[in-house]
Length: 345
Image (cartoon, rainbow, N blue to C red; front, side):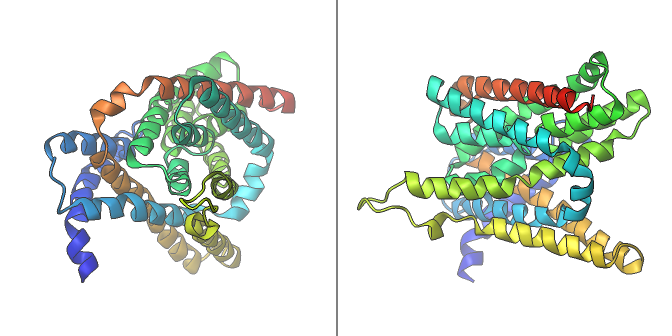
């Protein structure tokens, strides 16, 4: 009862913001629900100053519900399907993730960018945008303003990629398979991958959307090793007040283990029931859970927006945007180079 009493108002406010933001995200997938939610939250918090009664619920939404969203994301991951279609893209994915992390580390050092923002932008750019940031943020102890800053940068280059990549792909003479790999490895967020691939299909009368989506899901699996490595790195880096190392148990991303479990459950189910009534029923359930994951992310982003100072965000945006630009260009260039070397062009 205490939990409900302390948190209901904040959770309700986030829910009220999330519903229209989610709907707008469906109407305008190139922007996406999480961005609408963050913007709405930041605008509302300009006028909604006294959050004493709602802050507990807002914090719960931005932290715990964000982790629940990552767990539910696992129910959209059929590892069997990913293994069949995504294996071909693995060298490209590993290369693009590596270059993004290297670029973010070099620029963090050279430009003295906040390390947590650099990490979130590097991981978000290379893996899967908002979902990767959602998984990584609690592991590295990022606050809501750092999350909002990173999401905003990812959003900017998502839109640019979705708008120009189909034309760029045509100019480079990419095949349908080549563009599917390019979109799946070089565009940050799932919604923007879908938008870019759909635009390509509309121009060329092809079906690259399936390829791009599977490649994108393969990238998403990189959340697992990245978050685990960051958890162990943080325990080595940080020290408590008495000089002893931070306990790995306190920051270990257990929610990632549940994400893996959800993926395994999904994979086993479809292996046992490859077709038929039970298959169709299970697919409907997993589809609902995946949709719920997306809604939870939108809801969490509304809470993050409510905890973010929009004026401060704009003033501090120069270096993170430049970092995002460099990661984005490097990922696109390496993706095309690796496709050329592998003969998938």
